[in-house]
Structure formats: structure tokens, C-alpha cells
Length: 489
Image (cartoon, rainbow, N blue to C red):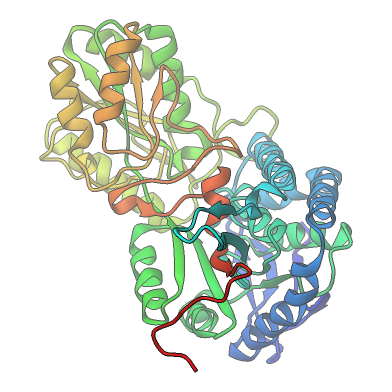
């Protein structure tokens, strides 16, 4: 298999790192080399941010419809390169063809939503003044250079969480690629170049894993970086928040999740089993929105678990390049080891293993654990793998208590034929997003995506997400009569 070569993209040009150093990204299924990428240094970071800053004034001065055109053209370019992006996603993070296609679809939707918001995102307001002769307004304007720190698990889709919104409002961007998926992120940067976006408006940094802290420190500390958007683990998100705070820079953090799926006694089990299986196992469970806790009423628990285990046992998994594969590998050996530890601990503590629970090569079999309790590690810890855990409860109130018994608060789901009662529960869930009779694994470009508690702060998507990348400025215009000040000539 040909090894991809990935350079930095700075000031509209593909370039090696200043040191000439490279590193290798590993294919999680084969263990071979997927990509050889430039290993950026602090000097490369400086070049990228300076390029973005130098492009800012021209880009911000464009009328909104011009920036809208570039977003639409980039979406078209992404569709042209759909097969390349899917191949890169398979090679670098193990996602089968369907996962690559979904990434392309969602990135295009986010680009086109941003294009449609080119005017609204910069719309301010007129503010009444106590002085009838004075005119007051608040205007929104682009913040400057935006740093986008993008993860590996949905590598094309999650570029769309920040970059299109930042760009359409007049900001310029430095994308720091995941060390695992530099080729995928490089292809997305190439799509912006294919669209003819001006030099320096979009820049890409790739770095070796051992230099990640140095590179991120340099990016956050650079005085021209004015906004930071990070998607990743809660552990790393805390570090990003501390560093951003030290420099008084605003950051949006989209972090981990332990999404509960409540299945009440009156639930439609056909819908609930299907949604729980999809939420638990899609992308091998490697998503912040993945269903991590299935909370089932005791009246229906046995039937629900038997049906879920049957689904898990029939999911095709293995080689992500093979036709028909639904689940590929987990990302690395450390993730595999953690999953095995969580399963073994739960079984030792009394959980029933209904399906899976074992590794086959670099894949972990879709797993169902019944009877999970707070004594088990998997009750609290994010598994980030194809692991469905079922907690059995008695009634709605206990279901709600268990759902809220966690440090995370990103996505959630409730299944019930009584939508009014389900809505009441949804309002009392400590979660940024709740779905009634739908899966936890859901996203649309126009929604305010984000969580509470340890799942982060700030929002991506929708009009609220656009506001994250603007500055608000108060402007006054005095009337024809000169103001009378206490001190004057």
C-alpha cells in the first residue's frame, strides 16, 4: 500500500517543516504506516499564525457574499474528493467506507450552513439610549486568527465544527491536525485551496505526537491567535482551558461524554433497541455522542437486553476495507487494553456478558453488559469503544437519577410512548442535548452543539456557534446638540 506524504500548508503553499523532520501515523487495523507527515516546530507555528494574521485584513474586508461563495465552493470540492477523503479516513483511523461518506456529508452540510449565515452571523442591533438625540448600536465583527484543534475520530466532520463558521465571518484559521489523521486533515485543507481561497486564510499544522505539547503551547501563546476551538478528551480540554485562560483568550471546548439512553417501561422496543445499538456501536463506539449508558426499566429489561445482544452478535466487524464491514478497529492498543479492563472488571463485579467482550486482532467485538452497577468502573468511565452497558432501574425517577449520576453532560436520549412525560424528564437531564425517541448519536449543522459539566463549555453550530467567533462592539453617535460634560471649556 502506498504511504501518503503530508506537508504543512502555510500561506497558500505546501511546505515541509523548518527542520525537515517527519513522523509516521499508523494504520490502526494493519499496524503499518498510513501517513508520513511533516513534524512542525515552533518556527512553523510562527509562520502559520503570521500568514493567517497577514491575510486577515483582506479576508475580513470582503463582503459577506464573497466569503459565502468560498464556503460553497469548498463544499463542492469536498464532494469531488469524497473518495480520497474516505480512503484517508479508513487508512488513518480505521473507519469503513460508510463512516467516510458520513464525514463528507456532514462537512458539506456545515460548510453550506455557514455559507447561508454569512450575513446573520455579523448582524448587530440598535440599542435605545436614555438620550433621545443619541444613536447607539452594537456591531459584531470577526475576532482575528482562530486556532482549530481537530481530533481523529470524525476527522473531516469535526473540521466543520469550527472552521466554516470562523471563516464565513471574516476570521482566518490555523488548523492543528490530529497526529493520527494528518492526511485526512491535509485533504480538507486542499479542498479550501481547490476552492481558490486566498493565501493565508486557511493554514495547516501537523506535528509528531512527542511535540504536541510544544506545538499547542506555541499556538495558544501566539499574540495573534484570538480564539481557540478544541474538540477532544476532557483531560486535554482542561489543559487547553488553563493555557487559554493564562493568555486571556476565549476557548470553546467540545469534550467527552457518557451519554445516557433511558428506556422506559412503555417504550417502543423496536425503536429503542435499534437506536441504542446504533448509538453504542457506530464508529466502533469512538465518539463523544456515543451511547455509553443504557438505563432500562426492570419490566422490559430482559427482553431489551436479549434483543440488543442479538443485534450486537450480528454486526459485521473487521477489515475496514472489506465490503460489508460495519465496524472497523479501535484506534490503538491502549484503547483495546482499556476496553478489555472495563469488561473484565464489570464481569468480575457481577455483570452479565451477553455478547462480545473479546478482541479479535485490532478489533473489539460489539459487546453488551447487563446489570452494570456503580461498583463497576464502566459505570463512570468513558469507554470510547463498542461497548453497550445496561443499568436496570425501577421507574422514571430512578432512571433520571442514574442518568444524572455522572460528571459528563453532552448528549442523552429517552424512549417512551408518553412524549409529555419524556419531555419532562428531558428538561431535568443534566445534558446539553436530549433526544426523545431518537439516538444519542445525532448532529445537524444548524443546532447548538455542546454540553455541560465535564463535557465542555461553549457551543458549535447554529447562530450561537457563530457568535463564538465574533467580537461585540458598542458604538454611539451623538446628536446635533453637543453633550454637556461636568468638565469642559
